[in-house]
Length: 113
Length: 112
Image (cartoon, rainbow over all chains, first blue to last red; front, top):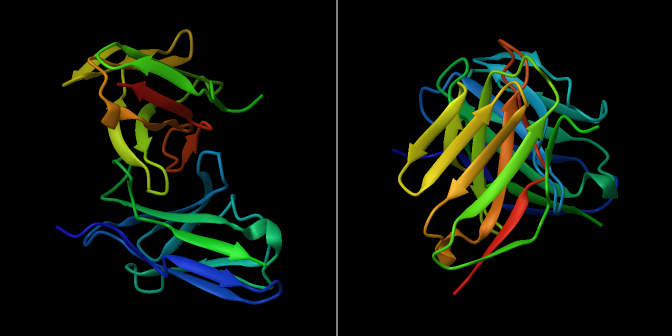
């Protein structure tokens, strides 16, 4: 079946601009994760949803970062007033339940100029 | 000290040889351990998962876990040029928690 999809695949933003990144998880997957991957580093956890509930947002780097999953399916990661240090690949992953394998989407590559 | 540590490499191995990738973790209560492969510009792809001490084999891949030493490794037998990628070690670091904690990855190159 279809895997995790993300859009846009690439985004160039001017510093100070707001951006919204979308994630469509695998159908039926209740768990959804956002990770940030800087160049040459492993992914770092940002936030986690179980259905529509945001159960862990401990990895969000500042209050400029906001994520939602209002209907328990599609999720949006929003970054307000983007800064150059926000430039990274934003990865979305989904899993079918607790302690299950996480499957990653292709990522959105964000470049803030 | 980082929670999950890997040698960043690059690790260069001749084709047909065994590639050995290592990872250590700091949280003693870690429960689940994963190896992901990431090709340049692509997303991580699960290679192996391991949950209990010992070895787990899947084709050319063997994962080894030693919880007492807080050590997990991945062996790739009969290495192929297509195995050239970055290998990420990931740990589910808290019982019941869902997030994965990743190492920085080891870049592996298989030389024909």
